[in-house]
Amino acid sequence: MYRISAVCTGNICRSPMAEFCLVRAFENAGLGTAVDVTSAGVTAWEAGRPMDDRAKSELLNHGFPAAGVEAFRARAFEAEEFARLDLILALDNGHLQELQDRAPTEADRDKVRLIRSFDPAAAGVPQEQLGIDDPWYGDMSDFDSSYALISAAVPGVVQFVAAALDSPSGTAR
Image (cartoon, rainbow, N blue to C red):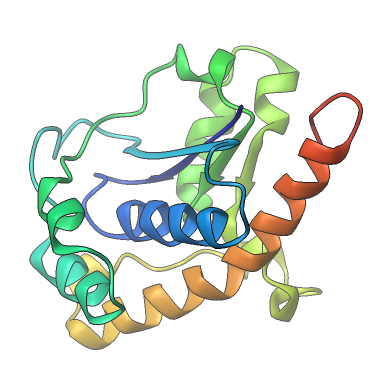
């Protein structure tokens, strides 16, 4: 089993959208039983709360099942997750830095990547420009933009994980 977590600030906007998009993509690729996708926040500010209503609307507008979207509850990223995860997808550079700083080993640090680093259209874009801004401070158009940026990166994540699952060690770097 390959384990992934998408991580943003409070786990109510960007990372849940990434989680739902990734789960669907892995299922569509026939890898749903081989990959476990979760999401979390670098903070516990929103732990136990539902997804932001605008993120819910965005997912529902893209055909995600209402029951799953409504059942979602935010949670905080825990240090012990480094040991069980194969890939940690940060949604912006602040999350990337926070997670890399928390990583107990260099190998764990290497598991942390910006989600947009998997978007082929972002090739050659400086890392500091690959973050996805927090839509919470904006309006519905900001959620649309976040969803589009996440969606553009998802096929690259699926390709990366599929290659890792095909490799003799089961991991790709």
